[in-house]
Image 1 (tube, rainbow, N blue to C red):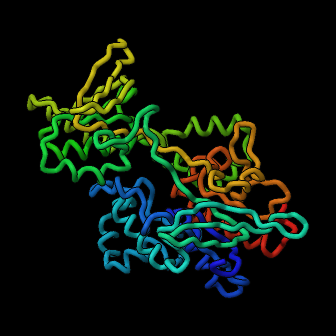
Image 2: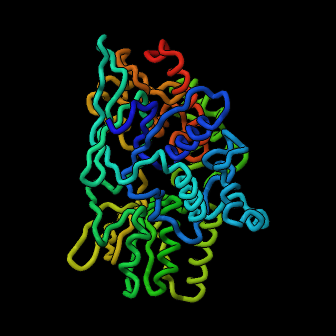
Image 3: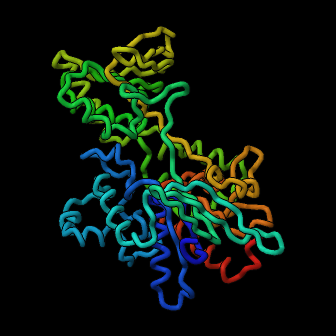
Amino acid sequence: MSEPELDVVGIGFGPSNLAMAIAVTEHNGTAGAGPAVTARFLERQASFGWHRGMLLDDATMQVSFLKDLVTLRNPTSEFSFLRYLHSQGRLIDFINHKNLFPLRVEFHDYFAWAAEQVADQVTYDAEVLSVSPVEDAAGDITAVDVLSRQGGRLTTHRARNLVVGTGLRPRLPEGVAASPRIWHTSELLHNLPRLRGTEPRRFVVVGAGQSAAEAVATLHTEFPGAEICAVFSRYGYSPADDSSFANRIFDPEAVDDFYRAPEGVKRQLMEYHANTNYSVVDIDLIDDLYRRAYQEKVLGRERLRMLNVSRVTRIADGPDAAVATVRSLVTGEKTTLEADVVVCATGYHQADPYGILGDVAELCRRDEQGRPEVRRDYRAATDPRLRVGIYLQGGTEHTHGITSALLSNTAIRVGEILDSVVAHRTAPALVAA
């Protein structure tokens, strides 16, 4: 063992487990909170990073700055976004800006600032290789050994609880592989420097959500000689519903409602409120893109082409260009577009939260659709033999609703997980529940 048995090992260190590390730090610094919670977080990246490939200069957050890593759980926290602004000498400037939605690059800097303050809990550049059960004399699994590799060194951490926060994985269309000419939007800023100084002729952007619209706007600005073809099956970009009543779907109390609701009601709620988060675009960006398209029509040079009510049926990387085949959903007519780059804004999928758990995963229960069974405190339902807490930060949308992996409820979620960890530590009889 690299250190004594830990209360918590966190797998992954994105915003969710960063918030968890902060909650642990604040718990340990609170008088009367009981014994300190010991934790170690393992992150395969070399440093903290969050969607770096889409940190566009003018892109803003889609949630209020008050839904930061801590404020909804602890409004007086030293880890709040306002405390970060004060430390950077920008608090007054931000107030004068009269805006609830900071730049995305600024919020990333806030995350990095917070991560630096809890760096003693994190091991970066650490790839988790396996999770192995540790049995007691009665055959119960009371701990797990987490084996990780950092460079050429192997390290084992023994833990009584795991908090799995492995995040999302970029999703490309079926049968399509990334290449120098075929990108996922998550790689947009990483790949753009290769094209600067060249004269691309055409880009094709596939998708109708926020990332797609941002990619279209960025490429249109960055390469003034190129044609930008936006392909989506809708008639136009759909605005995100961020109205006050609809936003209640992100309230902490809404998680309780969703968790208790019958399965049919859960499906209805997801359908009713999908337009708060999925495949929607900020109205200001929609207006900006329409303004650009109209202006080009007036001036007689249309570089921004909207291929709406259409679907890309094939993307191939040829010897001289990427080739996208676009089919009209109205007429069925197919158009072949040769492009310097095809950008796929086709979203993300949630990695199987049990995928890294090895034999331990066999003791974690799934529902009839193969999804994790999860308690209200985000603790996986398990075989009674498994007395280790497996907590999921993501992969619980089917049980906890739309905020499962979103920032909106992160501060509250990690507080609930930490409360559960502490409660099970002080009341061992609860562990098998």
